[in-house]
Image (cartoon, rainbow, N blue to C red; front, side):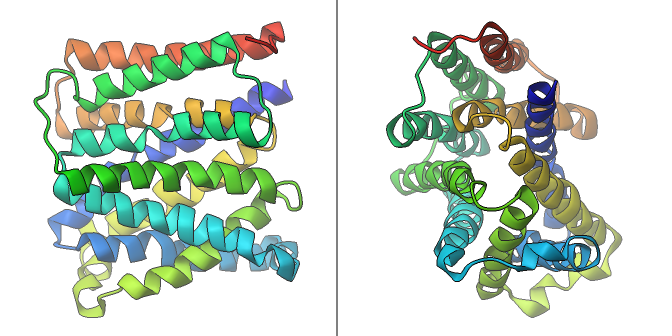
Length: 296
């Protein structure tokens, strides 16, 4: 039962990430730049977590100095690095191409898990990964969409996937020494303070002074950042890293559904097939745990 609860944490976290496009669009309608969105996603999240943990979990503030490089990696390289590279990719490529490049991340995590931790590459895991990749390509509109992108944009996209994947790897090591709350807090301590470098103060004011900007900011911080990282990291306590990364491909599916619900985007046959592929991959992984398969 605990294993399935961990799966639920990962799925819920990934689903929350799927709402980031909704809140990004809201901020775009009040002319908040992508660089200020990097700040808005990370610094207010750091402030919120600091206030919450000061009230309920003060133990998160106590860590060993020797582990600061670990949190620097998860905060600066993973969280802040992903935002910077992903936004730059979006400036140079179509959103579909940026999305599918980002979701190369599970492939990197699965390979890293096999190399670093000798995690078996089982038949089910490989099949689930392939299904997830195909599903993401279909959901993102890469198939039949005539997408385009520059060489620099593609490099930024691959970089965003590497940064995204690195969080799962840093968290794997961090959770050996600390609980998920401590891992999250110190990740955002570095990401939040680092995001101050991207703040353009006068231009960020609409995010706090207009109804749409305020809604976009609150949603981006709470629903698309704090909650997903809390639940995803909690899920990593009970789900193997490679599997969690594959399951996180639920995110583009939720993103596609939000487009249908909030923006009247009509799903095509490719989108529906992509959704089925992603969920099929999740089911395969769940069956692997159920059957206790350990070798390919």
